[in-house]
Length: 159
Length: 193
Image 1 (cartoon, chains in turn red, yellow):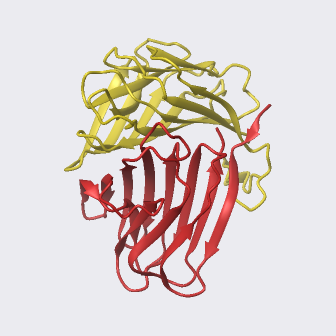
Image 2 (image 1 turned 90 degrees about the vertical axis):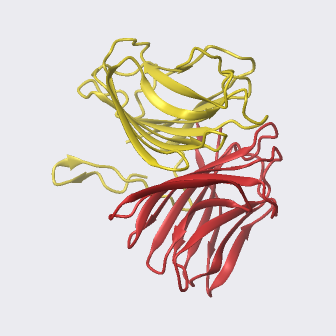
């Protein structure tokens, strides 16, 4: 018997600017998480960072590629303090992050992301948290603040 | 629930994510969690014509004696040279494009972790198969994949399969002849339309 694939778990809409949002006490009943971000930065262009289970250590890594209209680029880093999953600008931006096998306890957590900032660039990211613990909290943050009205949605993907 | 059914004569469907998704629109069909190393994983697509499109979500690790491995696919078991692939990837330093015509496989990723990568490191991919059961269209498969290992990579892949046959099977395998390791996971989803 087929199972519904996507289950909405939480929605956050900012009533005022703030530096981060946190999804906590995440059920382990799903296989993947999908995080959908639609918003703006209050004042600048900054990367969107995700931290899992409150880990602020240098236990993350990322690689990305982007197209800006005037050129393409790519880079990465083997040790960072969060999953970098896209960019946010003062114009409308979005990111969709697929956190694979978040509830597994035998795998590092790999996230695949697509991010679009219509005024500046489109990008794709692969990023990894080098920890096999099941993810129970997801913090989304940015240097500076997310603007009021920015939305953050969390979905569980069945498997 | 589909929001748009047609636009200017071109069939188009959009799916809205609401707080109350209809169970019948986007469904989990099956999950294969590999329990012991295997040369290939076969995902059965027969009898699924009630769905219009398919999606495969996977995490995978290879037994290849390196930090990464290339994982590819075949449709309907076809080893004929009727696939065409295009790839755009970032390797941590450059954005690179590549292509292959008349290949005997479709492209998932070159960046799944292999035996020299840190324990627990796998790599992921999300694969969309459009109009999987059409008998009037060649099949289009796209993949978003990536991982961070000693060989970093984020990739967008596109495969054209020059056959109008309805799909009956999706085979995943290592292009280096290595095994797919235990713990690798392949979940199949169907989208109605």
